[in-house]
Length: 632
Image 1 (spheres, rainbow, N blue to C red):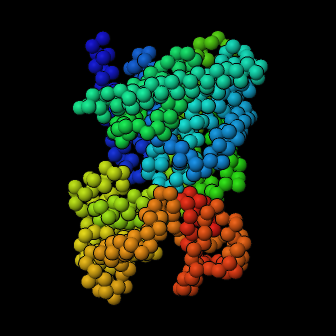
Image 2: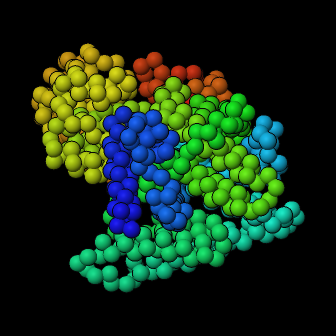
Image 3: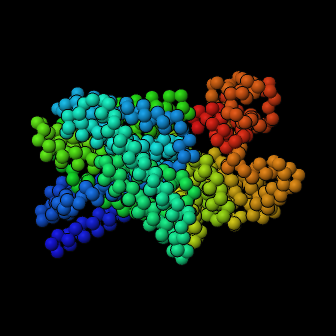
């Protein structure tokens, strides 16, 4: 018993250590961590080094956990789903409400039916088992989507759809799979009874999750959690709430626990919680550890023989799922929405399957094999083999190449380099990132760098006047480079380097001493003088208080944006016709053409390539930008 316990300690410690290394490698090489985790799991499992290197025994084996593996995986998945749901903000979902709703309904239905038909036609299983596999493979899941979005900074509307799909489909796919599985075991085929089973589990999960979320919210808001240790108690209370909601719902109905933690996570994440930043950071660290454990442990269960036994037919299912069914679901769901073709293609080819299908398929296979149903053994092998093959292929290819896919399709937002991580640089980065732009700060001071990173910014440590540092931060692909340090000499040198060594569209330099403005501009550097800008802002509040107050809200309730006209619907038409077609409250304030800027009259006709300035509400202006420039 001592030996078994010691071995388990070694296994768990190794898995967690490898998980941390995988995260470091993910950040270093900008590849989603799940790719490294699956590779590590295979290497540490029976199909890995122990199978090929004499004298090396597999470290991670199913029997090492006794009978507790399914319970550990279940609790781990609960934490992962809760973490993803906690960060699913309602205001982000509004970035693409129609497409999101259709993707988790119409898109999910297309994925279910399409995958089931492909499995039934290509593999030796009957229709109910084919639909069971199809239900499992609907789920993309936060376990694979979140690591991808960490290294591929797509626009908010794309990230909102993928995140929402992952959370919702994890819940519905797991419950639907359980319903189909029970129908197979108990020989239930009546649609009304199947629908009742689905609604029962979903309802129990939503109810339990909402009740636990309400209790946790009340405790955080109105109960004294000990003033000296309140943040820590708040973190532990939220974590305990997630685990309790999962356990209670799961005890009432199998797989209702996933719905419970998803419901609780969404409700608490969108509530105004005290200590929210501390709770979020803590849960992120816990999720990293359990994510590592689940992926490595389940990858170690892979049996290559079961994958190879599927042969060409198995590869056919993978191709059908990834190349045919997924794009069809995305394009149908995004009809009439404001996604570009490139964004639709990105969402089509970045939909890897995650932990829920793997863990549930493993559980079903065991129960099928022990059911005594004729042909159950073969069905179990096909079930596990197909699900793991699709997961392995989509994670390695789609998650592993996600950044390259995004760069090829040009869906990564404008890259902006900000040299200087002081207050000016960080506030600028906040505003740009709030618009969905991809900002990288370069900072040489360790304290300023740490502050910027703690605020959530991407920071490269180094000297902004060093060409190699600029290049490593992405200056080759930057559209805008801003020199925002407190030293005019540094800012001038950065601006000159940017103009001579790289090819950004815009180079801006902060000028701290107004006497240096002329010197900068004589060298062709566009400048922003902090002294003059401050004086102008004060003057605006004196002479133009209404405008100054409104301008202070830019990026929050109101916005002003400039966009190039590329839509053929606008070219050649007067402003008087275009105005009513813009979102309510949005005005065309300025038009820039051939180096001149003017306030357009009602009869002014737009031409392709005009740059127009839009003014209005924050969300309305962004919708208008997409209307005028669909490729944005």
